Image 1: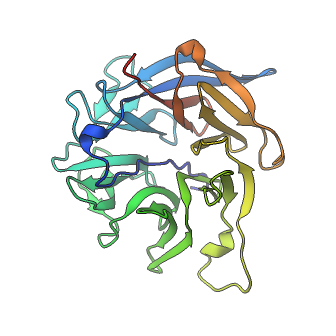
Image 2 (image 1 turned 90 degrees about the vertical axis):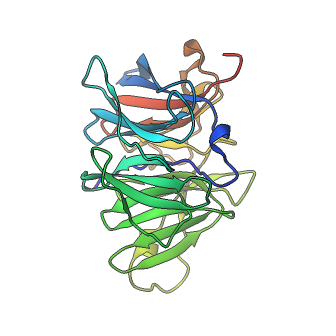
Length: 309
């Protein structure tokens, strides 16, 4: 599958206890484009309890969305599936693990299993794991690598991952060649595969975070002479690091109750950020994670819930 949408997962370490998970909720909108731009409509609140509801991921067919939640009783997180084709009982819990929490659920490139970062309770062990589509039969992919934070599939046998602790490394994992290369440091949590282009956030300049395109030659299984630089796509919104692309070309980020966009970003890199949607009308004032379905017909946001609400 050439077009793989990737998703950012939660960084979870021993410094982040279950009780400290923030209160968040997921909002899903229909997304349409007309002569004046993109329009949001038909908001749906997706959550399981009033605690942590986060990390939405649209399946390739757009019929479902995975997310994680610590449920109505709090505690560890499990994977849930929201089915857009059903009018009632459209949220289904998939995992029931006793001593682990799951984060960053997404389909594997062959669409046969669900991958996630699985965190063992009261430890710093963060493994990459897969389940079948019913949330059963777990498999740990790299048992000896226990520092996964976020990840992005390149293809069925290769992935890019954000690793803890600081300085937060970007590493490539290739199973057939048993390669585990470090490609960059001081990166952000959002990794995307857009039609074979791997996008990541370089945070080495604290005043100017940049979205970069990984040079694919760096992933080749042979040596290249000279320095292979990664191309700068654009700077992020100041202080924001989660991004998505609509139909592989229009870049969007969310901040301070607004969605901002750079149109046709691969061809117009100097384009300025412009407001795309005002979320204040939906009383969403603090949003950050943003995900767009493959077809571009839905957009999901994660909003922080304040005590005043």
